[in-house]
Length: 83
Image (cartoon, rainbow, N blue to C red):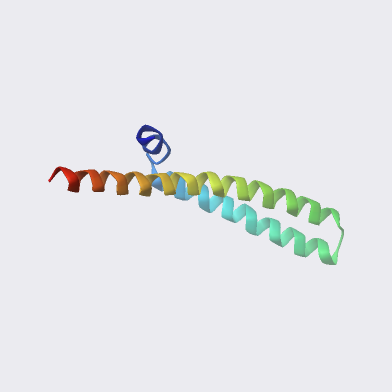
């Protein structure tokens, strides 16, 4: 499990970038849904697709951030045991 956490959380800056891109897609999807409320309903369908993609991309980025933090917690705990 430690190797998996190390692999997923190896670059937290990149993970944050992925998370923010997903958040941007999610926000764009919300705008499309609002736009579709006033105009044509197909804008809402496009908004739902963007929200789904945004959630998936954000979850992937957050997984990397979480893995990095969890890996650091586990390693700090091991260092304290050795001292």
